[in-house]
Length: 604
Image (cartoon, rainbow, N blue to C red; front, side):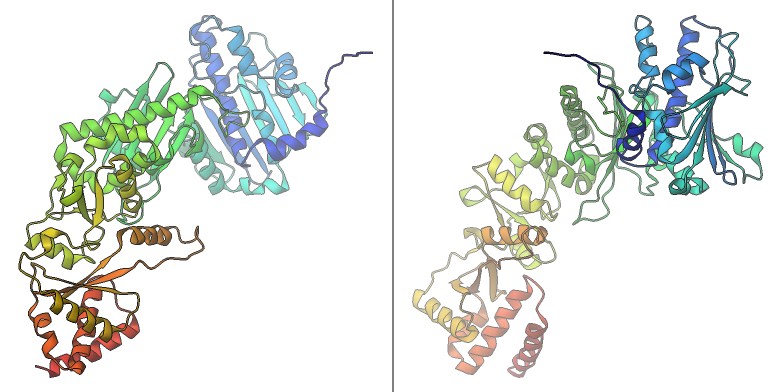
């Protein structure tokens, strides 16, 4: 036998869930209550514009008042207000959205939903996250309406009585609970107001029972109701962009340049993305992109909207069409989110392309700062790489910038690169002395980017400048294979390093007795392990090394003529000199090097 019924929700059991699980952070209650006040003002303005009521021309505002002695926090708006029946309807029915009902009622009117923030009917109850009693004083805009007072301690009961409010609007009075007493601190409240409400659309004024000069305090709102992203890009000046950057991010370093987003179709999207100056050449400084919906702060760095690589930027994005979840903290799954994300990525690529084509010198001057972001983006998003590949720059050891098609390529389509101009200075000098060129890839991300380039541009091989001796560095003179083998044997016996490979080559740079080359593949793996050491348990694999002895060097030419003692001394000293060109000597190695240096000087 089938039966039908209605699922019942017990508010007494629902309140603890709302208080503990609905919102990720307790301080969000302030955003929710003030956002409700903004909606109340917006509803009144909409009714006035639709001719449903006469405008009283009173400037809209929201007042936040802290009474530390009474342990209360009051938030008051001069919006639409509520009647006795509306309080019963909107407040006592959990998850019944007055904002949603308003939009539905006036859906045929133009822009009825523009600027309306609330949709779920739960924001008011966030007050109980920090309160053990909440009161409402409200007066509807409607002619003849009477003020209403409502209160509840968060249980399943409430009381409604005559109110005392004399002007239209609503005041929420929160009696702060013991575990919410941090919000009785004025500094804490102001910091939360700045975080969540700094760009809300109506002026917010803060005052407290401790204020000594309330008149002065009330003259200055705590928020900026007209953030720069609302203006048309053509109407914004460089000074305004920089001032807004300082205001939003309190960064003393000015951004390099910025992108102003202004989209109305197929979705509404406004914002400004700044390219910050990187202060650390080896480590990318994380960015910060603030997400807003109708000027209400949602969260930082939401990866569904902002691709991971764009989070190296700083900026704000305001998108009223985002499908937020019930707590307005996270996004619901929605196909439009992916479209928004792709559009932002495209706009960034378009801006970079524009700067490259129209401001090439500036683009080159920015390159050190923006290259990690661009390379990271290319690795993470191949479509971004397709847009950027022709404007990725590579600085050569001679100081000029080249695109990929302009790179110097040598035998077997090899491109030589430097990962540290100071560390590999000897090799750089050899290249320059012989008219060769290489590119500089000094950032941590370049260890990945080189491999990525080889995957995308499979005909090109990238080789670090100290990984091999190319034909262009070798001398064209005849070589004595027997003599070369003698030299190799002398070095192997003197050094006694089992895993060290020794080769004898005639090099064009005659004043260098020997250099060390490192296996390219093994060194790359070692670099990745070093960067992500914790991920791989902190283990690193030492790449294999080859000692290239220069047979055209005057010292090496005489090596076979010395006795065994001098051969040992010179071989070890020459090896140490080659090592110094690669890395710092250990304490033991340095001690041995200093001792041998004294012995070498005695030979003079």
